[in-house]
Length: 490
View: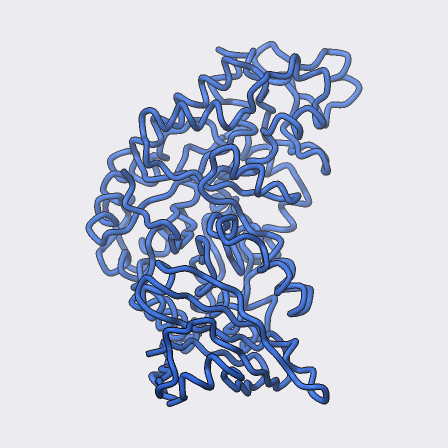
């Protein structure tokens, strides 16, 4: 069984970039088996439960060559790293040639050493899986053309952007139904029984190396989505969906293996029903960035069981850096929110130190940026405090923030509590740039009428209040713009 807890805190690391920076710092070449202990310590601050080593698989030389010929990609690369050298373009980690650990990273032995380092810290390991497509030079294209969505020579001639001639076969390029095809990958056929069996086998082998997988664009393989994307070209629609077939097969070999889905289009619930332990909560991300507190509050009224299987985040390799999209005070408020909600939480290496450059995943090097020491200290204090408190082992509940007829600022505040487990905990976040007030009635009759103490988990400040007030009219809260409280209630 995986040692990853029910609501894990995950730290995503761009493996090649991170390893290159370690090599530059130490002056020594080497793979994952040669990473010094202090470097592992840096990416596993107290409160992290799992590390996602993004991009460990063998990348495609043919996919890299296609990327190098793409002017728009080359422009994006040099925007991110103006002095980039061509040898620093590794190719996409999502254009996988084989599910073998890249030799540049130390191969399977290097990954095993990395897993052992993490396990010694009681931290799990997550890796990627890309179910929708493979590189054109994947061995599958020559040996198993039946695994792919096929085309004709006429279609290739008419639309070379959508098809590719590979190993004597015309294969469709991989795609998402709302965008043009990706030029560097070929499309697997989710309806093909042999492909489903092969996917199960690959994931079983991956499960020998790690505790779980993050499945790229998982919703593309759902029967409904795949049928809409490919129509009759996909062949007969199976009675059972792709993911229940695959996940059940993998779990016969690895019962505790974690499956996390990159998911969009409000298909999170469907993917949870099909066997995923966690699904990206992109809707919350969008509401935090682009909408107001009322919208966020509405999102948090969803069933707690559903919310516990979401992945909350403020950035990842597909999204702009949080330090770029939010001012510092809002970023801290949002981080408090993410850290204390139910569900898995995802943090991106460099997020804690305020990196602002969103790096294309094709690259081995990122620009140097001055670390924000205070921001790192804040994040480490937050994650450690929440972890030590044990709050997220309890039962979560969204709370009402009540105002007055002449003061509507309570609408800017969001509050929730955890009870049972390790005790009673209250989080309040002012999700606005304005000072705001409210009363928050705590739903815990066990507080009784006696005096109680609210102690801040982040700065140890103490506030005596009567239980009668807390459970009657409610705790009076007055928070500055983007202010937060995280209290233990004793």
